[in-house]
Image (cartoon, rainbow, N blue to C red):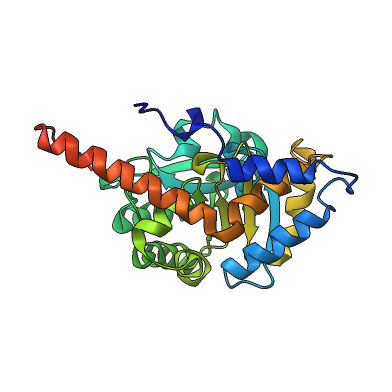
Length: 281
């Protein structure tokens, strides 16, 4: 048995088959490949968002950082949990790409406390020209504690943010796991709850190295394209990114993989509890 994360696992055969199929003949570069058109249409269908802009990058750090940079100005603040991946595990990349500041908000079990969020935004808003300007909220789902925000929890936090003029981002590195656990639709977990931009993860759920950025507000699309290029994440042989995402979405493989991972985690938790361990979250 091996207890490390999916970062250490093999790639499912369906993904390797998709890559092999894409490795035939020629395809236009830089995201103009026909597979990307299929992927874009499929993601729009899955999220019930026909106008959404969809882009692929190779890492979760790139997805989060470029998404947040698109939402913020250099003098802006992004509010996130103190244990969020963008704070603890991205080597300052959100600040590097967007030059804004992360403002940390506490909350039990890896989830932002709504009262604390409201207070933090109001405090930052009172700084005038001397302080950073509140611009975005970033929620991680699944959280770094392994807990899951329900659509209602997401909606409550987004409502607080939007009431004070902030955009809302979701770090969905393990979005599929959250969706399966919550038993809701992708739309209910995202734009219907107030999310403007989603980092739609794949690498933590079986892919070799692909994440999608889904912008539910297409007016931000061109800026994101420029930031992706300037940030060195526009791949020339893009079809090999597209093919991974194509295989991931086909026949709902992404949900099947997440369901299997969730079941394994539940089994592990039950075994630890039976052995006398105390589960913290």
